[in-house]
Image (cartoon, rainbow, N blue to C red; front, side, top):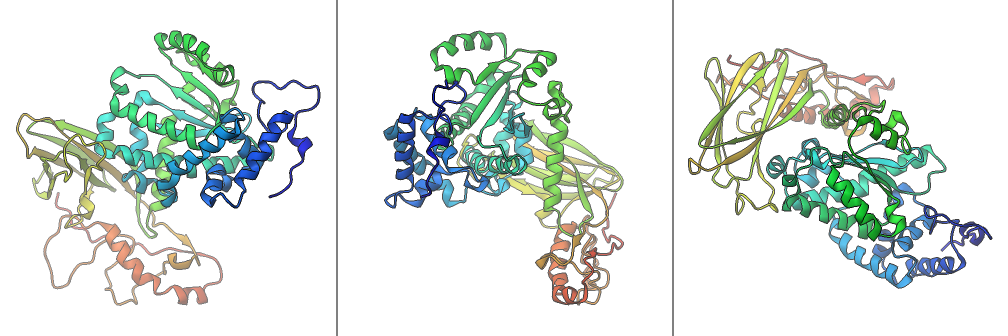
Length: 520
């Protein structure tokens, strides 16, 4: 255990510590420093397991300094040593299941659905940073769509995602600021809570259960990380209630919260006290991009990172449409020239749906699938909804343009029963093949694979694998399956390419004519 400079930890003699600095390194009283030292000894004691220390130093990957981490926990229990140790012990138990999963480093695996679809229906995200370097977190519960969320994921999965958000996303924000600002020591954030369009329905049991679980985790396992909460677009009754509640809580906590009503100019003035205008989204009068544009850019960035090398399909739009009906209904999708659309369907209806996709003009059926939730009931929020991706079904169906398609939904349950299914429409543009700098381990893609024993009309970029013995007319052959199979063959060239190429040039698989036969 390293020694500490006591003088650097203590408040200067004769000085008065303000509410905002109480309990931080450099502002401790003699009594507080004594408790700090005892807590530090306890944390580094050989009698304590490693999980005890890793719980205290939860932001170690962002290199939070030891004194600041220890003081966070002590402030949370007002420098009561016994209560602080008990809090850490409870946090060790709370974090144990998530710790076994490394706190879910992949958000898609945590949610069991694309992160962008979840954020669209429950906007919670980091957007820039404050004047003192604090990451800015924006939550918009008024835009929560509980019906869509019910088709997307489960409550336990949302909690798993929250572990990801705290231990990976938030840590990355902290580390980024630490590296760019050597004076950034207090690992805290500014929270903007936007109550616009919040209705009583959106404060139902499911929403409250999620909020309570997230708040419990944050207060127990990540104490003292709130620097400022700014509540925007607060309705009149909320503002009046806050004036009453403010008198019931301690002054230090109350000073962290500001409540603002409606009005972009009023909101901008308040936010500008803590955040520079170029870090404030256009929605709140700032000079930064709009929230919708920011979230779309993030969605496209993630999609590009997951795009297979050699793919010519670049995601343009992602739209989750909730289809609610009785008996049967239909939806129309128009696909423009040089576009490809991929469809996915999610539902938790145990009676199930029969979903048919056909070309509107020719009435040629491209796919007909039964989507039936294999869970206990329609309302079991702890279960992950059942999902069907047409691209992964037999025939690997995607929709090619220009053409219009009809999607028919037929209930397999009682005619008068309300049925819900989420249709996810992903629109791709045909672009140049994605490249990768060589050499990069097993991700090298050779310039040509025509000398491989895989056939002369095959491309890793696009196309299909036509069987010369099979002239069956297929509607659409999806490229990702082709890309994966070709990538295996292409990687056999890796060692040869690594030895032959030393110029560092990018490798790109040549484009060839697509062999898709689409009946329009």
